[in-house]
Image 1 (tube, rainbow, N blue to C red):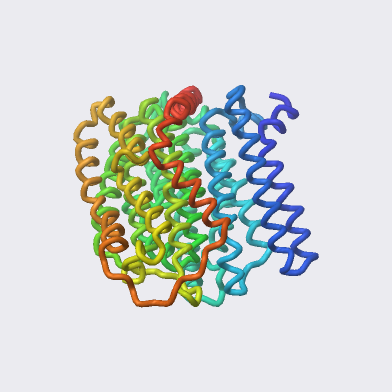
Image 2 (cartoon, helix red, strand yellow):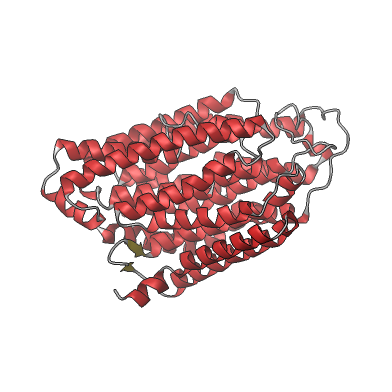
Length: 486
């Protein structure tokens, strides 16, 4: 693969990097008043990268290695990157108003968003341990800053510190696992690791694989490495929480899938037990942990843990159908999650203070009916209640598990999803059936917030089923790409 072809395959990442560097210079030489313009350019760059990547995926579905096998462009990576870029752009659209009201918005924020998107894109396309770690750290370092960006809020500072300490620990675990894998395989290339482990899989290599998967489990907030999620989600600014729950999660799940089905694909019986345990534990802990929560963002953190469990069911199948199911679930999960957190972001009192508990949104259907109905649809979709599109995401991963003879896993997942529906229904009960909270009229939300929320709600509505033929076709291509790497 020539150097020119490598540059073409990585055009989206190069474009975002150049945009980030250019905007960084603009930030350094202008006042804070230019932050809005910098944000607009950053959003445009993300949409441009998504259109370029999606266009390549739609027309030609390119597949090939870049830079000597360090990076692979295929249908799976392209699809994941489109989700990452769109989720980042959506969150960035609704971010400035939140920080500007608190006098804390700076031009560095959208610049870091661009670099985080570049790192996330590298994570899902990496085919070498070195490339993977560079992308992982590029994305993670930006995330640590986001969590503590609101320096005047002690909760934000606490969230950033917790995320940094535990994130650094997870990165160290991954790095140690990589060193063991490299020591026993003799190479950092995914294809070379697969060949070496197919020939011999010593106990030391098994430990290396376990360490790598454990570190990745932290990045996706899977049980038992989920302890940071409720505190960070609650303490971080709401736009940052929306970002954490969407783009980085897509990148981490994509990275785990490529690792498990690529270099470790020949040892699926060794890692499947780990994934099954993490899936079941995440579903149960996410469902039960959310029941007693009163803080809305903390509840959504447990919802995120719960959804990761369903995603891991598809990975546990270790089949093309399972990988396609995970891809479809991610495509549906992103608008559900982004829409939910934007709706929470729009919940404010007359003074602009966020409404954070169930008591605050009591009788919301009376005071803000449009927002209450949007939130209701999003919660029903997260619960997997038909005919909303969230039902389809759960259906395809359960179907893949049954086809892979993992019927008990699918049965437990279905039962736990019924339990999880309880706390989603609590939103509807409080908003529509409780007496309205005694508070002054709430301020109107910006048009940008309503626009992004409307797109998310339409995507998860029954209209989303119109996209199932196309989405299924793309997901099958993406899953096939993962198995072709092996």
